[in-house]
Image (spheres, rainbow, N blue to C red):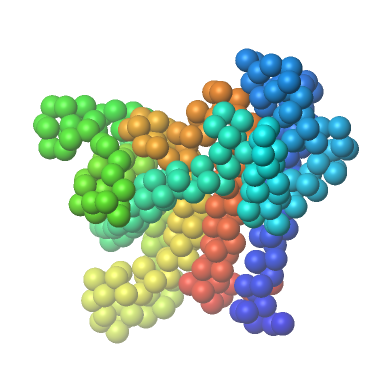
Length: 332
């Protein structure tokens, strides 16, 4: 198959192979480390009987490759787990059972995922609007005070850690000015208005640092596009500068912006740990921190796999969108 459809299928196949390789690496890192894996997974307060039960559920007497095959089989087809007095079926995609709550890991993730996606999607809209808008304005006003001021602001945004941004916003907006209440997550289905108000401050906290990167990239791409021959031709024919910047130069600069946005979206799903912890949002990041603290190994492995899934899929989507935005890309 040739053309764009073949390119998209090859990228999809590459994403599947990458996810498979990622699952191998994660499984080996967590389950082939020195020490008693059953004791680590169960926790320091487990009795010998509980440790033995965990060892049986993890099939630790089997070779590592066979254990990984059972793990992969659970993701594809599901697995049955003994919970002591009964057997529980874990439907595909099955990532195991939590040894702290005896809940299915996938069920835990699905309850936390809407919070993280709400945070990342809202922040993504903000960082695109702020970053691209700032970059376009900076390129348009090149050599003037506006450009120098915006360049200083973007550098400050890149240099400031996200938790510092969040603390400053909480102290100033919630504490001193009292413009917003302290963030509290409310489900979108329960109250859309309170959902938005509760996430407004976390959105800006996550978006401001990312917007600075987008502003720098947009400015550089715009300046490169504005120096091309077809832009000079538009100017020679008397096309207004606003039309050149908004309709022609921005279109030519979109490809790297799209690619960076897709990559950042995948990374932000797992990278929002600090924001979720800072504002007490019950998302994937906060749950991952809790699982690490209590050494709930199945939850840690499942969370890392899901975060890796978003990163890999986002990169594959970025490649496809890049080809759509810039037809000069060779579809190989």
